[in-house]
Image (cartoon, rainbow over all chains, first blue to last red; front, side, top):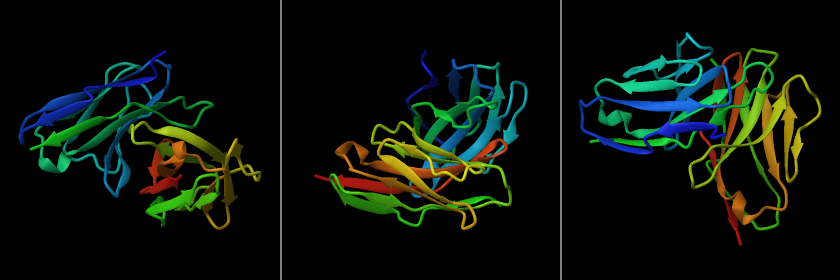
Length: 113
Length: 112
């Protein structure tokens, strides 16, 4: 039982390049989330998927797209990376019926130069 | 808009002493859940404790307890018998519906 996994753990991009951050959970959770963490800002929600087949914008969605590929996987895509997207990205999941807490992946540190 | 405020960016405590981290929040909802998460230098987010807003009794998990004041929209975390392993960032968060809202965090250092 791996919990929530994210790949890659570290990535360096040049401005304008694209990439996809992968997230998978093996806990049969309904909801999945993408956050970014910046110094002094806490965690800010980028996108979330309340259930398979649905996605919704969070607080800071601009410059990102997401795909809920199936119940297990939720990817985050940067189409044209900008230095302002340098951050640590966390994926999280939760089971919406009984357990309200989120379970987090280990994070991806992304640097855009 | 939902907001979470942690007014103490940094705190320190002597080993074995008690420390309280503050959190206030704003919501128009009546049913919601509150959490404290710990983030050690490893970066992993770890759930410390949770509180259901409909419960009047304060949650306790070993050395961690909360003081939940619903009318005041306050949710503080008390750490008793502080240990070196408690050194971390602590985030207050709440959920109503599907979205979580996080505070900006308090960096806690336990001094030997």
